[in-house]
Length: 174
Image (cartoon, one colour):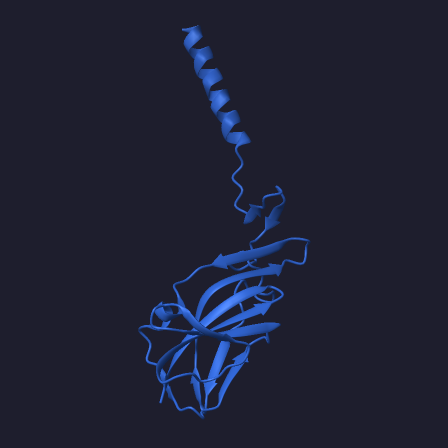
């Protein structure tokens, strides 16, 4: 009988000590690869507060004469400095530009339509690619120009210090 009471008491003490040693931490903290713990309770998507840079490249607006085209964001690689000696980054893949725009209605343009690329933040450089029907790049230039007739798929590949982004749109050139 004394053995049962002793066994019960030791089991109870053991369980209580395990429960007491396991502290539930409900703070929002993550550890990076260097075992540094970062508080993320006030950060959105682990990319910083709403005032800090996001993990997405700047947007691109294409003006076709007086009309606006919003290109599809394709593949991109982007990183931001967290301001504490660390950086956050993202690599995002996508389909080819012709696949990205295949279900969109291309905007009408003529050979003399003025086309303007307006980046939210001006890139260091960009290249404009024209894609053919066989999903291959048929032309590449550092300037935008209308090429050919019919549905033309354009890709703008832009480079910033933070990374690179691809944007795709199509025009129906008459």
